[in-house]
Image 1 (cartoon, rainbow, N blue to C red):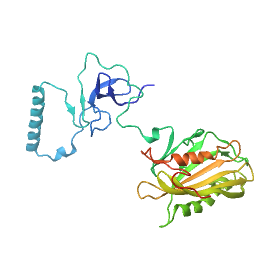
Image 2: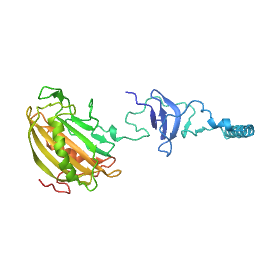
Image 3: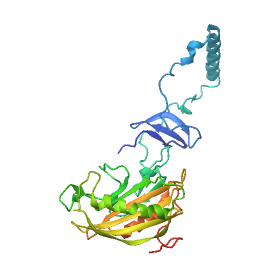
Image 4: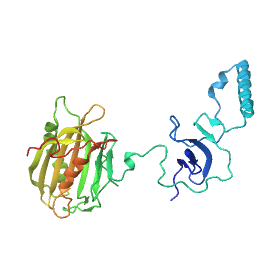
Amino acid sequence: MTPPPGWYPDPNAPHLERWWDGTVWTGHQRVTGAPGQPPAAPSTGARPARIKAVALTAAAAVVVAAVVTGAVLLGRDDGGGDAADPATGTRSAAPTSDPATGPPSPDASAADGPSPDDDPSVAVDQLNGITLPLPDGWEKPENIAQDDVVMTTHGVYDCPAGVGFCRHGLVITRTVTAAEGATPETLAERDIEEAADEAYERNAIGERLYGGITSQRTVASGQVAVAGRAGYFVRRLVRTAKGPGGYVESLVFPSSTGTQAPVLVRFVLDAGPDGPPPSDIDRITTGIRPIGDTAAGGGVGSSIGPSN
């Protein structure tokens, strides 16, 4: 695969970066890591006309023209060195006898740096400022109408009630609009009933994909450390008229960004041999991090003991 256009280490001058246009190396270079230089393609065409030039008087236009002409002549007298592009902070290098010919390495870092969204091992919730690890058997959502789903298990299957298609597992993240003084425990306890109904009773358009809920019970609850914050979770085992039912969990913790509004994470995992193991919930919870932070962590039993 040919690397996309961007700034890459110059094969002939490792201390500089050279612009790769997606096909060949260009003559544009810049200092590696120089501050204030945007990672955009360097301009190669003529400068756009200055809109405000129409407001200049004839006398001012003559003065400006004289100054520009003098600067150009002075530059030539200085030895004809490469001129820096004031719009991009780059310079156009003169052709060399041994120009770079091969494409940059696919592993070469572009000037923008890596983005969390590019990491295949995590799902990213930009709104709440967190990343969640993707355990084996999970993937970032594809072809999902619900925009708050951050990960799902691989593939789909015919729903037990014979209506539509279902997934063995999914994880949802939301920002909670909470009354002042509401605690993570209060919010998690309040959400779990709705979470179970939306997962196994009726979907958003009223379909009973599992024939409805026949029973449910809380199997675990308690305080938990999430991304360095004190949160609370409630987990239920749900039985349905069709199929094996599943596990539903509501996890709430304060965000580490912005107004620190509560973050809600819902887990829905089918029970039975085809569903993911419930331990995946703990793996994901333990691995939740603020974006850009690899140190903060948590999980059941991590700094805050759960109470069942």
